Amino acid sequence: MKKANPALFSTRRIAPPWAKMIMAAFLLFAGGHAANDALAGPAGKDAAGKGLAIAIEADRRDHGFKDYAADMTMTLRSSNGSESHRRLSIKVLEGRDDGDKSLIVFSRPRDISGTALLTFAHKKGNDDQWIYLPALKRVKRISSTNRSGAFVGSEFAYEDLIRPEVERYTYLWLRDEAVDGQPAHAVERTPAYQNSGYRRQIVWYDQAEFRVLRIEFFDRNNALLKRFTASDYQKYLGKYWRPALMIMINLQNDKSTNLSWKNYEFKNGYNNAYFNKNRIKNLR
Image 1: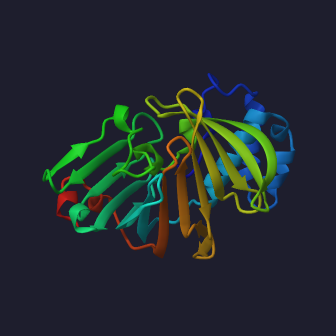
Image 2: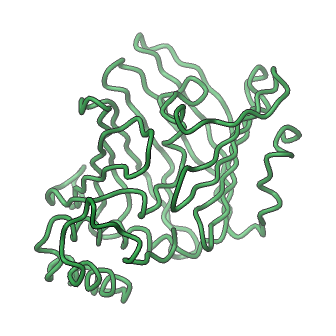
């Protein structure tokens, strides 16, 4: 989602007057100090309007990267402390009129090499995901009812790997507080799409750059399930912030998964033809 249209947000779950929401979005898109002014202004007095304004601003600041690629090391840690490691790469194509497309391909260890996940995020309706499993030699579609399942045995669910388009959630600003010494906005977001494994999430955005610092995921019974953190951010192309480390901790089973990122490259010239489910079984 790259340019939020306030008309897309349903009043079914977001109750503030339309004028306040539209004013917040307009001021935020003005950039500069207007973002902080909007959060302190009329919409900022309303928790739902302020939460939405923060999400719009975070999304706006990441608009225009076109595409990027990166390499990752995945570290899976069991409850007894044992570890296993995997290597993978990701390519992302920014969506214009719809959500982003991404392709993840594993290269090591040998038994998982060639496994690939293709994701099409959408602003409306169900997202699309396909996984290629070399052992089966076929591409399998991930149904929307299975998106809460673990991705290749990690603590990341399939739905965690889909870009969170603004339109797919409702929002509620909770409070401002420090996260690891950084002033942050705590915003509750509730999935507005079907079959999510989460009842709600709390996201902490740093107040300076609107980067995601932490997310807490609550299961369908509203029990705290997982905690995600992103750190060691670096700026690319003078604008786009990307973390070097992501950690997902499952607080119910004491397992965790780390993703260490490196070799970010932007504007590689990818197009829609590259993100094709019919060719992912030939990737390595």
